Image (tube, rainbow, N blue to C red; front, side):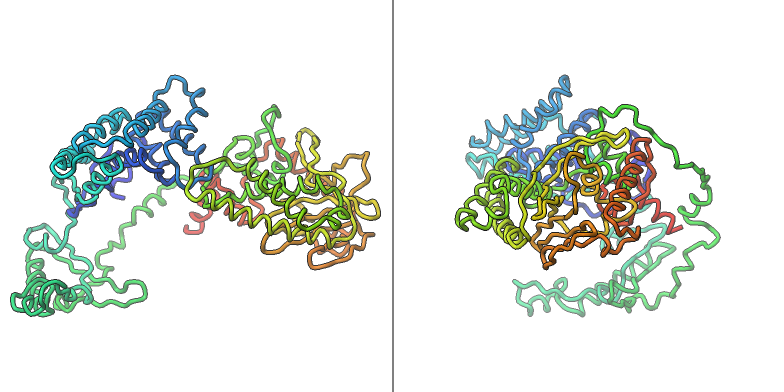
Length: 636
């Protein structure tokens, strides 16, 4: 915060005007942490967040292209949905980028790391030999980089060399050890080492009271002196008899000794500078605090006395010099070449949710990094459910066959289709507990599909008319590829359009000006004219919390309603557009979809989310910064 200009890329790093006397664990140093992470990766998988930082570390990526390669490797590895990523996973991902960066040596270095792991992992060596191997490996990975090191980095590197020298002396204790044990010993030494870079006469010194009590300053500010810690509570040593601690007035043994010690310290601090300030917090959380009685003799001064009310804060100074420029955000970027536009109803959904979101995700191909989760990703679960139901109905064909089918045979069919779908959609992985998680998911899916088919049995008579039918349409200039989940033929010969959903849905989303769920309206409004017209559309909600059909039908249809089968005639729905007839709904859908498609084609990219929750699930906040701008406006 004192050297904010250091965040500017390629800027010369400036030294902060302060020095903190307390050291930190050496393993927390960024340079050393990168080196240790490299060695650790040779032995065990790393959390994806730690590996992401390693792939883009400035100590391993001397050029901007190397950092870009690291970022792309990170993105590709995240798509595998693994919380822990091993060296073999990284190695198998490298070929995806090799053709794009043929002359870059950055990818070859990661192969060197895998080769080292395979050759040395099982070989026992003396600690001194492991020290040489570690140095050789880190150099081959071009750690700590080719750029000029800062003073702190140079001191850290020299300290690390000394630790490796001390590590070599373990030859007197250990004979020969394997790689994992050698790394464990080295890591332990690094973690137990406290590191503090040498100071350079910084004007601000931040230190403890014991250290400061014997130094003279120009001015001193002693903070945090409340009655709960000054004097401190007693903490007798648990392994020394208390009587001995009392007799010899050992540190922290008695309250009397602590009081005398703090009184002497307070007097020294009062005499350490011409200007001395003691301060005490008013509270910590909900707990009220009071100044220590050892400083109650010091004249009390309000914090307002230290604030120059005639001088603006830094934020106020920046705000006062603002030069606002008004820019009209009504520019458009029309699409002239549609060859790179790929997608279906998802394009129209994004455009309805927020025009800028559609522009960024479809035209710029921008998307947030995948955040791996434990188990199977939600999107993959949805794909598996779609495939299982497709293959079951492709085998059964109609409700009558389903009802007549023996339960054991049906259960076997369900299990076989689940196994097939999981095998085709989940790549083999070395991730820990992967087999157990897949077994749990199989059991969940089996119960889920069984319960869903019970609902299918309880419906009025139907047969499956078509499954996963692919088609292509164009709305004005926008080409779309569509795939209908399922179309049922009801007892009277009419058709019901069904869309599988693994989440909660609302019918009102089908009857609004901006169609945020355009899939069913799109299929119904642009149906093949050679087929009988659809008489209804429905969401098939297949989820553990609640399973049901939710939809709307032609005004002349009166479907039997149950808790799990609720198709409402359109005149009985509540909607802001006041639509009461099926044909009116079809025309409204066409009008809305055409307007949305035209907005996308002519390049409307206004940041206009349909509701606030849209931004919560967008993932592009760092690009559009809509919420950031809104929060700044609110503060001003």
